[in-house]
Length: 310
Image 1 (cartoon, rainbow, N blue to C red):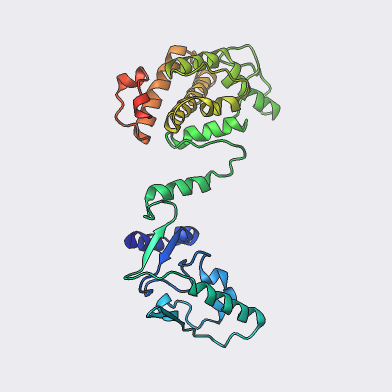
Image 2 (image 1 turned 180 degrees about the horizontal axis):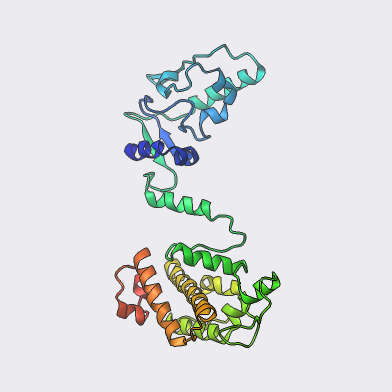
């Protein structure tokens, strides 16, 4: 754990932002900074008592330099530039002393605990989850990222949820194009996000296929938001819902690719090709990015994966 902590510290920017997730457990106190590192519950002492830290002569002093514990008797040893004299400084000294006298002191060497894991041990997985949550915490709506799919697939689904795709209706609304705006897949209605992914005949066929293949209830949606939240309402474990959500994101990706192929290359939309691509891409991405790595192609085609998701 100590090696992981020291390695983490060396990555300057990351350390500066996430070091507060480590909590020092003082033993000898010789390797933990008294002011700059977090070894009390309230955060670093520098952040709690900035005025006292300014009075400190040696701001890199270790805990051992400022706190002596002998036979369960604690002695505080400060080295001030000048003695605390203002009412605020004296009050802070009193609070700091009371906090330190309540602190539990261990034996042996100093240790570091990682708060994002119940075991207290640092793990890349827990840090990754925290970084992803911070990165995608404000996406403009309640869109949920799915790390079983590539970023490009999630990004497309997110743009769909915000109605930020360059559909023909959207381009016409911005005066980018003046030609026809009817859907290139069905030719019946204007091509906007809601039509392309929800009400278009081709899209409805795709969702009918997904519901039958995944063995879930029929997918009836009135808005794109309904599609992106459909997985929340199906029965099963969290892993099962995440799997269905990943497949629905892939389906949105495939529909958009089909639309682009039709618009830019004149390719005909073929439902059989679409469903085959959904199976292939979801098998490739989910199989390599999730914990469901032992599923065979035959099991995937039959969607015999429930035992892997329990």
